[in-house]
Length: 269
Ligand SMILES: C[S@@+](CC[C@H](N)C(=O)[O-])C[C@H]1O[C@@H](n2cnc3c(N)ncnc32)[C@H](O)[C@@H]1O
Image (cartoon, rainbow, N blue to C red; front, top):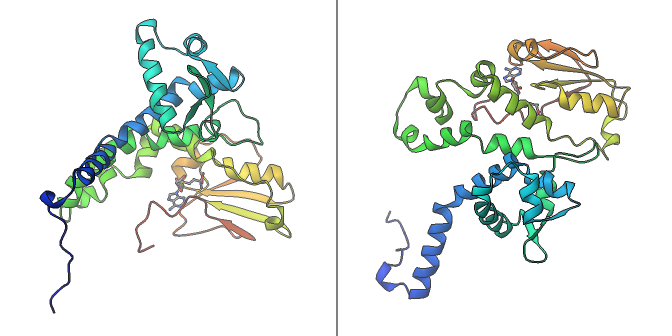
């Protein structure tokens, strides 16, 4: 049966306005990665925290004092801030005075337990580990049946995600900090009513389960993790760590928690 594909308009039939719009869109996509890199720079330089310490708004000269940027690079800092303002990461109430927005509030590191800081998560997601993996996507798609490169991540790093966390201390720390950054146990006490035990499967260094144990002391909490992860976790007695493979065994508990767990596997799991 003949397929009814609509014919895309030829370049010659597009109006100047349409062409201009298309080019603007293309440029946006082409340089889109620079937004992630600007965000990563803001976190690594500690800009959100510096603005927070200045009371939520800071002039360029206050930022110059607070940030580890040499005088010769200072003009570039204001350009970086312009991009971050256009992205909605910072605001500029009066010219040259930068303020936090809801986005950058999530990146402030001086926060108490009641607030959330996502800077470690963003730092990990924009790190060279992920960036290098995404660069391999076209090559990986063209490659048929390469068992050594089951994913673009493996192609870039010679090991899977968790292989990398076990062999690379920097990556492992980045990952654990990123996972620990997302704790939401407030306002959900009803979920734990009647629960006496909980096991966090693939619970990393126990950050989540420790927050649960602190908020709900009547719940006996444990973590099931791969042996190489459990070996590296400092024991403080607040929760129990069980070394094992979830595909083989899950310790019995009233509640089995699977948080940010299923994404590394393909759809057969
Ligand atoms: C994406 S992380 C999530 C960590 C934690 N649940 C959180 O949200 O912060 C996945 C975790 O699962 C662990 N993991 C991977 N395969 C596992 C398996 N077969 N059995 C138990 N844990 C596993 C990894 O070591 C890693 O810490």
